[in-house]
Image 1: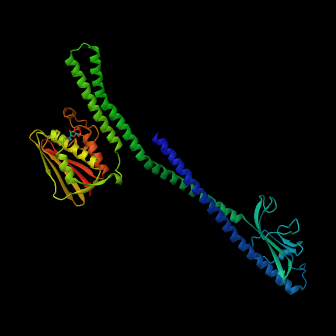
Image 2: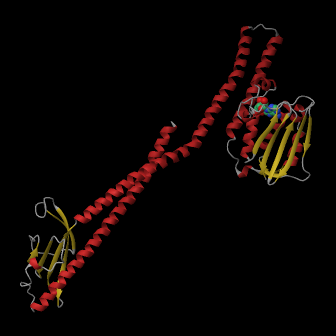
Image 3: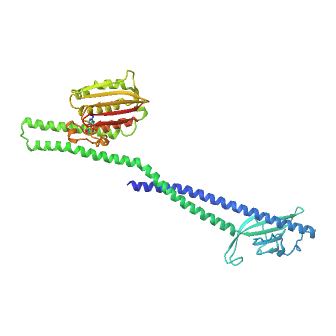
Length: 424
Ligand code: ADP
């Protein structure tokens, strides 16, 4: 599914970039062709001017009238040496062809534009039709039009230059299209990454949720089925079964709300969800909460906070939940008579909260995984304490949403230190 979307994205990227590229290449080719033709026209014009000047000179020297019949025979038309001229024609003022060199004109000269591109049919100059560029220049003598000079040069050179330029352009377009395809593939891969991550996240969530719900559901079902098979069970037995069903259903409710919390609160919190909160007050209130007091009954819970307020921008309830999870864990995994230190201090521009316990600790091999959902160091031990393996995942997600970090140091048999670092 992701590969197909990636291919589609690459295709669309290539199509859009390719059409921009082709448009630019087309415009650039057109401008080159225009420029090349303009240069040729300039040279042709200069050539025609030289010939016209020579004709004017001869006319001045030899004839006083506007009759050019004895201008040297057209074989002697004063064309520049080594000229690539296809033809040169001299018309009188009425447009009648007087003399020519090369290919003669079939019709008398009408109103001809200054520059023209014409095709000379196959068999006249060569076996192939030849494209020529023609100039028609009116020639004046003593402010009177004495005739028209027409000169044409082949466009073969320009054509081959343009063909060469077209070939180079096409090769460049193909190479660029290849680069665009590669870039498109890489970019679409980058664009798909968050979508794929979200999809994997969703799949894992569904798999985890269904896996975790199966066990309590089976317990409810079996208790209900046994109850139905033995309708005349004594009141005590029936009561026990109903109690079991209620207990399992309660744990399912906790599980579902934890899973929903994890699914809802991914990503970072918006600035408007944060408010300035004094951490000193928050921690003081937290250690006095009845839930914490209940779990910390047989343990010494010590609070160390600075005298002055430590203000951070947080979502107060979420942060309280993260710290409560850490303190509850510390209580759950610390044997009676143990000690828990809840500390708050500042370090540069950060507020640091530490939960240190003298509990059972976590083996080094488990440390990299304890923040993963449903990970329990020892499943049977966690189940005894009612753990679902979601408390640390939730705490870490909350801290990450505040752009903070949650880290752990632990030694088996000695205890653990969980540390929250929040930007101030
Ligand atoms: P649970 O609900 O099972 O406690 P958590 O996500 O809170 O799940 O914790 C994951 C695992 O990390 C637990 O199964 C437990 O083994 C271990 N753990 C968490 N906190 C502590 C602690 N303070 N001391 C020892 N082990 C801990």
